Image 1 (cartoon, each protein chain N blue to C red):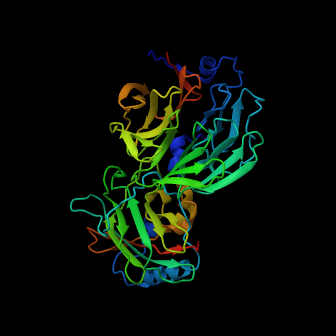
Image 2: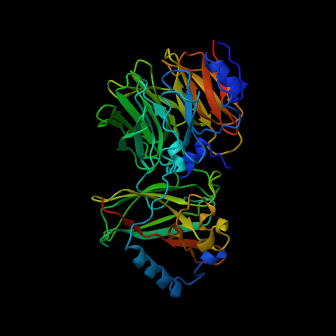
Length: 280
Length: 209
């Protein structure tokens, strides 16, 4: 595996997408989260305090209704995600603990889920589009039926807040990470913990799983602003053993693998645009 | 334009605040009681839960351990519902940073599931929290639950916090997470002037579910 760092949104997107990337994606973009659209070539994310969504390339048919919900408070932008089939997108709502699910084509609100007490810290649809996993400051993980929006399961055995949640590509594992400073794998057949990574020095801020399921990328935050370096850890998808640690200039707020698995994309605190690590 | 990071978003959520030096039982105390009575007529404003809540805190009213730095602090109050009824069946989880502004994210220091007496009252002995690096104001977190009521997640702030520059009425929102003056409470200093103890009353009023 070779890792390289390319900073700057314009350069990064050339590396991510096969198609040319509009120049409108300039350094100076300040996202709080992002997601690959189901086409695998479009990135979208909420920017800044306004909660407006920006998307590129512009005019994509599945572009969410930008700015349709500007009344959201800033906390609305801490997580964001599409269902893999492109039918839905979800993000925290205007009320604490609330998740709003919208029709990805029209932007119309489909459902409001009273998911958590306190801030919804992360959410992610399952690869088979059947479930939505949400985490919150209340230490809980909720699994929702993505058809009926009924609660399916609550994992309430944790004593830490999870800031990140991610599914394995086959849907058999759900990964969580946060204040526990490690990553836990949950067997989605039994919802029992099936493994965990070594405890890190830092809070786990975000998780992503490679398309082949072999790697789990975990970004680390410095919990006490002491100036210690942050990193993106690449863990073995099966054992959660650390394989590579990528130092970052600041906490990686968000990480995602490109759908073709050729790149890992990170949103680094204090840096405009996105950072991309090509992966071979 | 200020660009907030994901972490910042997740985390967001003086003297004039000192009513008395000693003794406790003066006009200021009456003011506090009157304020408490008035406060019981509407629900306590919610405030961010924050990322450092940990389920499973021990049942104790004494969080200050021998040798802990920081001004001793006693917080007390009563849990009410909107009907003005005391709620001895409530549960209060409380947590805050230590004197240096650090949360214990490995253990349960300065974290508690507080005991509540038969009249809905609570009291906790702890220390004045420090300033957490990513936050402006000193604060104490609460999660309060009672049957038939909405869970209340809120924070207590201190009128003596230097960030309010001696005028919390005017400067309460110096910390953007302090969205209402109501959560900034007066601080009473009691005991030996050389080694004072801070006392704060914080009534908690729960909204009907």
